[in-house]
Length: 586
Image (tube, rainbow, N blue to C red; front, side, top):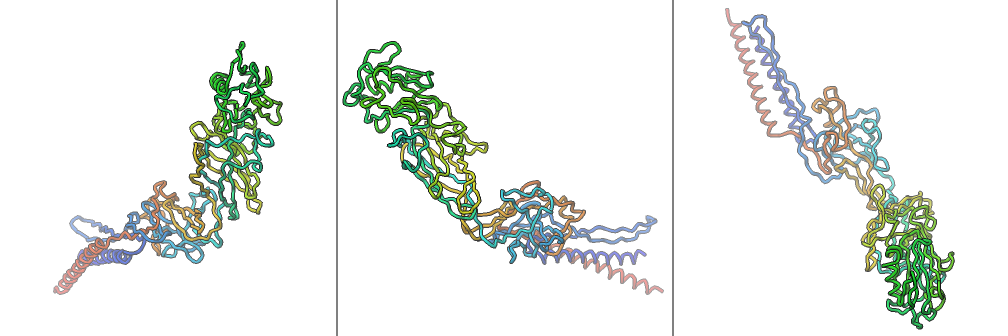
């Protein structure tokens, strides 16, 4: 019995080595196959139990296959933007055809290219499946299920337009610009300034794109203004600090002893001034323009209630610091404030003579500038910089006003603005109707880089994210797994995101033709992951994963299998000889 058992053992050894050789041959044949994973033979013995320890019955050997799917193959760069290799765990999800009834398969072969229908297929012809992205770049809500995947189709029969949604402008406004004072216009006005009446101090154009891809030229106009708070201005000009208030050549209508009162806030802070004469109780004597400026800026209300200055034309300008306070002047003795040869204060349209009120609100509701809600909220509304006010007007392509509001700059040249909840300092234009049938449009304009410094107007940079009609010029896969289409207008569109599928035991997958695998009980359930998350690896663009076969190692194993096979044949020959000797016995 043991003699013939030895014969069967030799035959089993030859069969096992033949299996090993077959696996080695398959590995060598696929040494250049993209994404191929090698297999190895594992041997184990089959023993025969004997009823008595004194009798030995030989067993046999069996070869089983071990897959090395989990072993990374070397990465090789390519020139194709649609090639991708997985560095780490995971598989691409594919199907043989883009049909619902086709089963999902999994592969590491990421050499994809576009077919005639726009589908991305690898070299084995499998169609890549991925998550479709929403218009905001969001993933499907059921992204953990295979049903959330769709064929990656990158065909664009038409082109792509991208309406402008954001823009940013970085510029400097000249702090030395002469203030526009509507009360001194040939026809006195109050804020807002009519763009058709007064030329802008600085103009900047920006081209944006609507939903039809049409270019729309938007114009930004800037006018430096005295400010929205209560203010008064003398119509007499060419004054200097040492101008004598009793100089008949300048103030022929003012006499020594003339008195006037300045009142801020409806009696909250008042001061009476006497010109060129001994002061009485509560009076402040002034003889020159400088005397008046010094007392107002240093003593009146502690120097924190009213600003006074000489403007570039030599006119006296009085400006309340509190944006909500009123400003009143009163002739007490004589008429030093009104009439020829006096300070001759300009009147504010709509108010009684020598009474001045704030012209615009810094906190809502906004009546003077209804569009002020589009502009950043002022961070300082208590005592903003009185010398940093600009009126900004945004014009439509036809010249009509799209939006108009106020900007204020702090003493350090930066915007007096509070960032929104996202940390942005934006002008938010909403529901823009271009009048050409395009969709209503919202555009957020980042003005965080606006500044006000003395010197030339300077546009540092400007940009927007829209684009006119463009034809597709290429497709690429990014490291994050995005499938991005590129267009001739410079725009890009993220179409899909490639998930990586992981398994608890990737070596338990069932091998399929085309260097692909199917799920089995031994592999565990599939898990869809974003690249780089949940234990999944990363995608390496313009790269493929080569076979993990080591040719030198395979040839070494082949030699071992050959020698083992030869040894098994010697066992059979020996048993055959022993059997022949047995038959010759008489």
